[in-house]
Image (cartoon, rainbow over all chains, first blue to last red; front, side, top):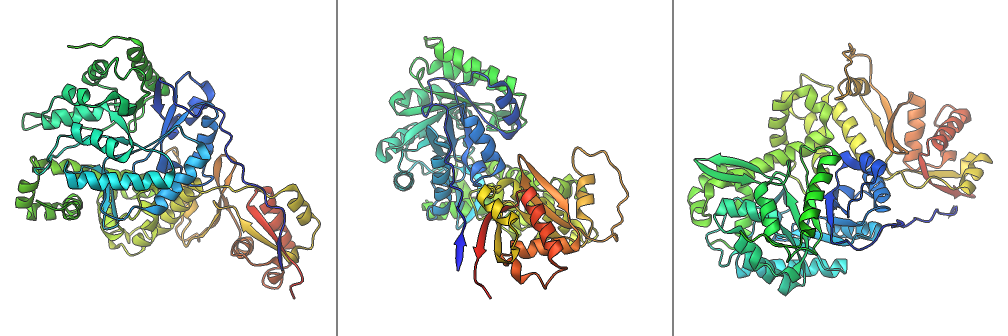
Length: 297
Length: 258
């Protein structure tokens, strides 16, 4: 007969910092900055991490995240749920996300208006949907399934894209608000993505921003991109490997004061700089939020 | 106009296979305003899977070189397409892939090195588990090991190699300036990979202790091992070692078993 000795109860994470994200600038957290952040504890508003990096229960990355969670509000940003895919929703992925949510008590949980997989094969990229009623209905349905499972609304982010479908029937700046209205999700407005797509597809980024109701937006992303010139035409790639460009800062200023009370995040995922560089970008974003005037030209 | 399922299938095939995209050129001219830009997605795919594999296998990459590693990644992705939205799982089949991969046969130790890197990566992303409680530790200290059965911490991995994988791995880490001569015929390793505090630790074991630990990890009751190995003192040493390194996360007492 088996008799287990007293099992050690699993300790749920003690979340010291607030469970709401302040209307302030935050930074994307990468493993390279764990030590520096914990040692210096800069006065940054909040942190965001890629959810999938913390799916391992009790993993070393999760241990670090829980320590940092003691000091900073947190947002979980998913890149692998593949909400726009025609495959069945990955319940195991959702279950792991739910477990992580319960453990680290994030203020915000976000994903993308993208598909990443088909027929069970994952491509590990955020791929664009056509902007049609068919795609909109599909994505609304999937977001609702995920929200029901998680018991909370998701924030859904607009993509950078490199191609446009000929059969799209509405522009992205109509698709995204409609997605929010029908599914009950909130929007994560990535202004760098708006700019990258605007240059690649020759639309007016300001028209896009003006068309997004501020009341639907719970978070803003800012990041760096890479500029190429192909056949004499500028082509932008969403690389997150450098400072936010002047054009994107100008668009962020243009969005003031409408988005002045929306948390803003500096994303930097490749060719990581020292923490100070990220903090200075966040300070810059913070100063624009607080500038209290819109630049209109 | 493609339906959404058809569009995703065709798009995916165009990303993973440049020839497929070329074959369906007219499809893309009908479907996309800018079909030439599919290349950007192809490049992203290539870079993302290569980065994911390189993050787990930096030493394998160093041993074969960057260019070879990039080409190998594409072949591996065709052989073992990613089945999870969590990119950390993508490289899990590389060691077995390498065992059958003819171009790396001149480096017969490569699958062993890959197994070690994978075990290290998995230990990093698995839990240390809670250590045994004081009560449990006292029970062990009281002796009478025969009734005990252990569960190991989730991060624990045991690895037996044909080649000296640990020496090759240590000598080829990014922070190593060592240029040692490694005798490939020196025999393999018996390694314990586990979590200790904030680190992944690797310890070399001798054969009897490796065997005992592997049997304990497989869930055998200690009493069933007494005759299988070199006697009670070896078992006692392994249990003490496991306690010191916090290898055990659960203890069961099996009473009245003949």
